[in-house]
Image (tube, rainbow, N blue to C red):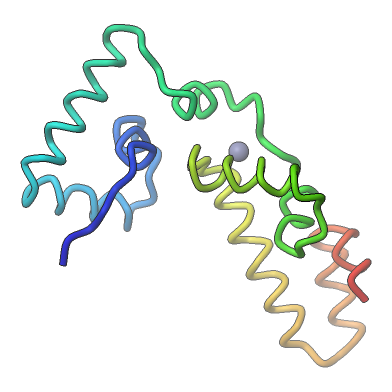
Amino acid sequence: MKQQFSNADLEAYLDESLSSARLANVEAALRDEPGLVDRLATLAGQRDAGVHSLGAIWRRQRLTCPSREQLGSYLLGVLDPGHANYLQFHLDEVGCRYCSASVEDLREQHAAAHAQDSESRRSKYFQSSAGYLSAEE
Ligand SMILES: [Zn+2]
């Protein structure tokens, strides 16, 4: 089955910032798809010429990383639409691995908290993650 990779994926590959699973996917695809190698070479060439995509710049600078609280609010769907769009761009287009890891972490904590019937355990989870989650109750 063919895998599709965005330029953000390929740039993350060049940055060596992909997860190991994703890295393995890209490397497998590079072996099978000459077109993907060409795209990667083009991206690498643009870098040498000093041309960076918006995503590459953001990823390098990490100027725009939202806080963990904002990521949590995004997960809960309580951000205003403009802000939520920005976070979605940051996660999906920029592919920020730091924020993606935080989101995964928050999602797991949230799921774990919901799996607990005990209110006391639940509050412990919330305290260990972030206070805003308790606003859901
Ligand atoms: Zn980020």
